[in-house]
Amino acid sequence: MVGQLTHDLSEAIVKGTLSPGRRITESELENWFGVSRAPIREALRLLQGDGLIEVDDYKRKYVRRITKKNLAEVFPIIACLEGLAARLAAPVINGDQIRTLIDLNERMRHAYFEAGYEQCSHLNHEFHRVYIKAVDSEILNRTIKSLTNGISWLLLTNICYADSETIPVSIEEHEGIIEAFEAKDAERAEQTVRAHLTRVYQWLLRYSTFDAKGDYIMDQQLAE
Amino acid sequence: MVGQLTHDLSEAIVKGTLSPGRRITESELENWFGVSRAPIREALRLLQGDGLIEVDDYKRKYVRRITKKNLAEVFPIIACLEGLAARLAAPVINGDQIRTLIDLNERMRHAYFEAGYEQCSHLNHEFHRVYIKAVDSEILNRTIKSLTNGISWLLLTNICYADSETIPVSIEEHEGIIEAFEAKDAERAEQTVRAHLTRVYQWLLRYSTFDAKGDYIMDQQLAE
DNA sequence: TGTTGCTCAATTGTATACAAGATGCTAGTA
DNA sequence: TACTAGCATCTTGTATACAATTGAGCAACA
Image (tube, rainbow over all chains, first blue to last red; front, side):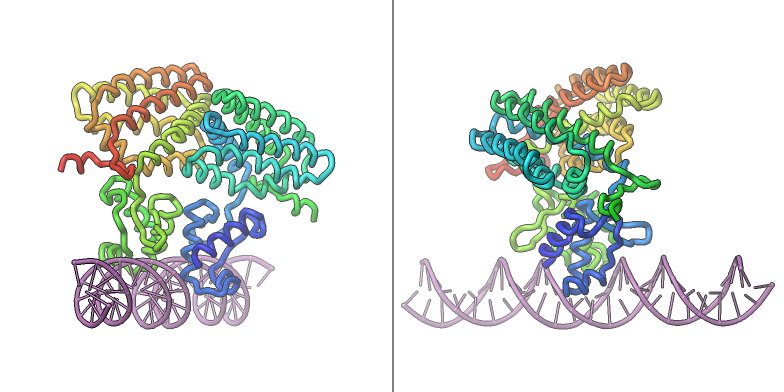
């Protein structure tokens, strides 16, 4: 049950159903899931250890907020770790996986012209997961995922509605990444991935809006 | 209470009092700390989310084991992230902090010739903390700490008993790091830190011993 | 002897009860 | 009106009880 709870809750947080900063009470979840507070408290502790739930001085729980400082901190870390992933993947990535990369990138190009941007951001996410998974490192996967979790819904929402001029640039940069993998050039793979993500994240940061407290303002809220 | 529990437990794990792979039962901790199972379970979940406690298929809890694969995975990640820390620290590190670095390195040199190696490894740890803390990034600090936690007692024990030929090399490499900081050269700071840690970790991996299952064998166990 | 099945103890999961602390509302007072 | 004291309510923390599952030991049987 605890496993189910943590899964459902983290998904709700990652997908934005439970919006950042939203207060969470145990009795609320008790009604929601129909189990007693004991397993709910444990699930919340798990998510707290994972960084998805914040606890204030009065022990109240909130969905982890997304602030400008937060994003500015997280972005370079992810860029750095994905760069490492690319470096470690370069010597071991196989032909199938490279073909998957090419395919995803082509579908992304197609989606940019024909389909919606949601599709683009989804394909983009898949693209990056390929070489991360190619590295047989549970810890690296977990670390990147836990850092990405906190912002994944941002990547999914923002990239859809914001100015899309970055997408063709990303597609070209992806080609550079693929070339590095084809050449099995670990150094270049790391450099290109890191440079790519650094650019994307700077762009995201520039196009994101924040309130006076530094909290990220969701597009949905803007639209209201 | 939960806070106290997690603190005491994680310290016991990090310091090696609770050795890796050791099974942990709730009733045991109940007697140990004199509180009921409810807060204990929550503390264990927090540590589980943090990666210090492992849970098997039968829900039994163990202190996180240290395996050869584990170390081989964790080391490059820490090296990468500390490199990033150095890069981000370079533009903002101040004179006091650089002087602290110089001082720690000199004391390390002194300790190498005069005092015990325990002192060396402690000073070494302090040295690295200086520039990590110089970066005002709670997330980077937390990420590095959580990765280091799992191996910190290894750094504290192994480096003491193993061949000490690496220490003078480390001291020289530290000087290179300090020079990069003095020059405010972010690129060089990252490179030198990463190269330094990569070397140290390769050395640690070479001098560590593992059993057939890949579990790390503690020096204490060897001595028995 | 080896194996099967049973029972009991130990461990973990969940529910509930009560305690402690925080919040908010109301009424009374200046 | 503004402010404060006090009470009711809500939320969280801890303890305890019971259920479910696992593991070990033992006995019966082929």
